[in-house]
Length: 358
Image (cartoon, rainbow, N blue to C red; front, side, top):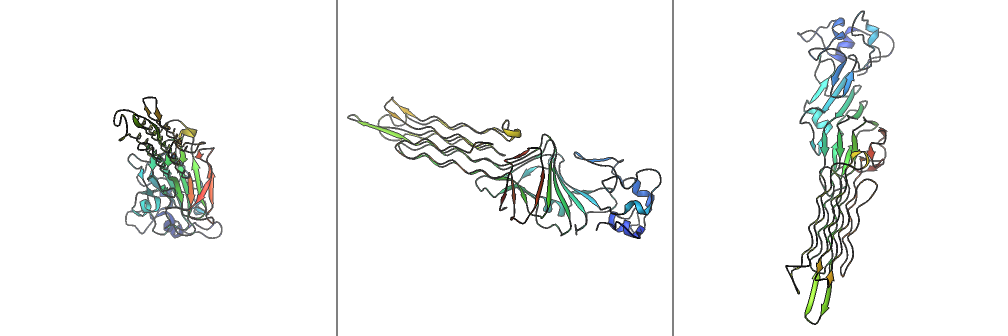
């Protein structure tokens, strides 16, 4: 609980907030709070976050005279670890990680409190966190909803941090002169489930949507006296995301003249993690439509989606081109009552907040 900002403050109040400094676990020395308990000297670095003192803001001195009044208005500082080596992954939950104890309490004089009310919790991301494909409301990282009322919660993305939805796969090209398959949907980046959550992103970091995959191309046919020729559609390109969308398979010709040898469509290409707005990735191209002896032609697959460009539908032929997949969102929230305070410098791609978290 945040310590009182005025009036009497006792050593016991301070110990209850920041922990007892002595090894017996029930006594404390005021001067010990000027340094950490085995965490190194202040300023203390945790990933790319820096703490100048046990209270995080420098109110408590780290040398010289220290007084009870220095602690007025201070609160416990904790950091959830998504910044260390191997701490990224897929479809992660910050409250679950906090509850599992993968958290640092600044100062090191106590363990993380089970009740987070009155404490400041920073979810620090400096690794890659991706999502699953096809469901736009599936988020790469969720804040979780177990935080107690009165928690000061933020998501702090470092310069190497990336929270991004998965890219949708491209749709497959047609079989013969049929229709192309639809591209897969992208998913979403950050899911906010706690009221009044701040989102801070350092230069180089990004929170981004996963973008839809391009639709597969339709096939075509040509009929003359010798018989019917078919040409299949091209596969759709993969949508940008983490992981990237894969290109759709080129369509195949399995009947008619020259079946199995000509007229197959080209495969769409995979998206790339590099490039794109703020490094949010580049879409894959659609594959070309098949050509059967220059008599029958298939349509090309659609390009996958990336920042600023939604996925394209596949081209039409005798059948219909598949539709491009839908984009996810960079940030989603449980409902419209949740306030998300974004300090990003343009590194939320696209810069919009949608409702619904899964």
